[in-house]
Length: 276
Image 1 (cartoon, rainbow, N blue to C red):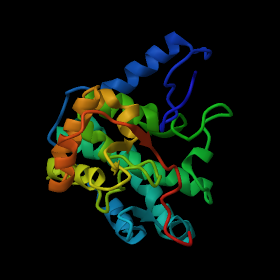
Image 2 (cartoon, rainbow, N blue to C red):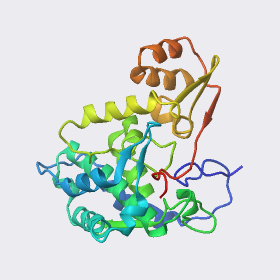
Image 3 (cartoon, rainbow, N blue to C red):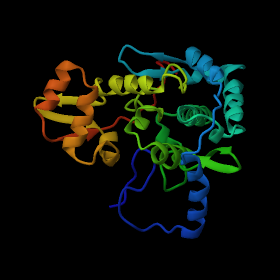
């Protein structure tokens, strides 16, 4: 059966026709950003940092929530988000250092996702913002143009970040505006201290029940670990080993006694502040 995962990607089956030639050309244009070329420049993300400090907050349930309604109503903050995205779009990311490139793409993804939600607000779930009649979610729509290349959220995450870095912590860096997604960072990503920041984000997610949960001896994980199992090792044992790497002591002990994943779960409710 054909079904779609969290980013609107086909997870199995057949029945869709695509232009292979056109897709190949586009893929080559996009994946050049995933190469190893790097410069010495550093990008300025202070504007996004300021916006997140005003509009995102950590809630009592441990989920970072966004004041979309307030952001939309602000005569300053909504255009400021657009200007920040425009500033990134005219940069050549390949002139940045490798850590700065990662921060650039992760921040661009998160900022563009917020803009997509604001443009459609109010919504109960980002999946209600459709790429087409057949595809739930906005992930296949063009959201930004960089270096003459039109990019979708899927392009940024899957063709650039995942292929360019081959690091499972990509999944802790990007936020899909949903309850079950790893938290939107309260500070914009920067190249300086990137590794430590990604590790902290991973720990925050793994040690929250929406990342890892036990019902008795049965282990349930976020569907992210099923959809992208290959990124985390490809087998239950390797996914569990990844989780153990970031789990706090009590959880890590339980994971070491577990050999299989019983199930997965994902809550698509929008990550909005109460009353938004």
